[in-house]
Length: 460
Image: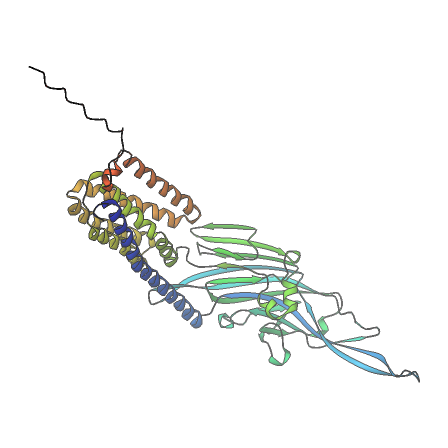
């Protein structure tokens, strides 16, 4: 291999990069472990406080009995018939024709160890209308008898209720409580309704006030024929998720205000509710997530995905300059520099758990660049080449940060970085005699000329 120093050096550097991939994988495992610990902390706070909330209803649940007489043939040959009375129990589900809700949400940060968890308390005031059209008998001559009607309401986690919901129907207050198990109602909260109010064509206006606490996310299921919701909060980083985006929204550093308008023609929520089971659990909904927009574990994990490219570019720069400037850099020194590059990502992770990500990234970059600058001063034999390489590392760390905070432009920035590095390498090595560097045969030139024939000695 001494005959081909360039090839041997390239193989050694490639082996060092494979070797450095091992601690990189260990750093990624640490990131995943810390991320899992953060999720466990969030779940612990949710168990003690209350989980994410989804509001459903109110919905009018009216059981009824249809009584009718049917004729049965006892003997076909003798044409013997008899009549019997049949009672069938069914349920009529009535959704609001309109529902207008105004909600306000206040956030608070709880800490579980070093992990912050966002919890909230919210107030919801709704007005709406039910129209009772009556129940048409399915059988000819059938008689309808109403059972006990219920006005039902659902929240995902009942522990989040900060008091009894305030409910009125037709101007009369209703006492809402946990749904009786014997009634098998579709939602966990219910209030009995006087059956005498349900006259065919009756219009029943309702109001609903509720204080609700939760963690991380709040959602709404649009069950009315015409659903309107306005949500106001001081949280400055909302994420609007679910099946419907707000029709209008205003987001600033002081908070946000968002409004939704969802007609029943735009959603399958009513059909999913009537189907019950798994379809009811996955009903159409819209929600606001209060997650941290700067997830340090997600950003650090993304940074490690560019780590190998980071190492390759740094080693390539050193290798090219070693060829061009005739520097002598030992493989062990390459390994030391690579170890500092890998340690950078662990520093970012550990510091970002206590500082804002930008400050953690800045301190980790400053520490690693200072260390490598001091080390390269002795490796390269002076401050000038050391400062030049440190400037290159500053540019690389700056580009990496730009890639991390601009996810939409990450591919473009990465492509431009690779193109720029390739262009710099091609320019720097454009006059390099690779045959001489590789230690192989010299570069072929014009064919050798025959040596001149000496002239014969003069005859004396």
